[in-house]
Image (cartoon, rainbow, N blue to C red; front, top):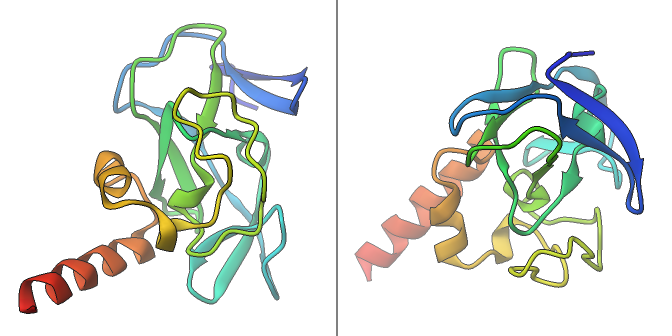
Length: 158
């Protein structure tokens, strides 16, 4: 496990926390694929429309937030790197938005992230408002970027 982060038990279960400060744009956690799954589960990560994986620790332990401090970027290990969206202070829980990898989410029907921007539920990227998609910029699953291009193309053709 990386010494830049640590895992501890919280009221939400286990979570990942920063052992040092991270600057915006810095890689916080490098995820590695454990295996390809035959179907999605509540703990799988979606890599493409028909591809779900099991992620290694500590990545699989990073909790959801509707106002996360990391976003995802596809990596060479068939998984995601978790990139700092903002400066992260020592001791802060590392979080990411599950809807940035899941086209339709089954992970958590009721959200308890506690963020002031909490959306109360995670339905998936398909249902995220455009302004939230835009906020994440490049830090979403590569396969979802195609859906944004298709949406923009459709709107400009009308």
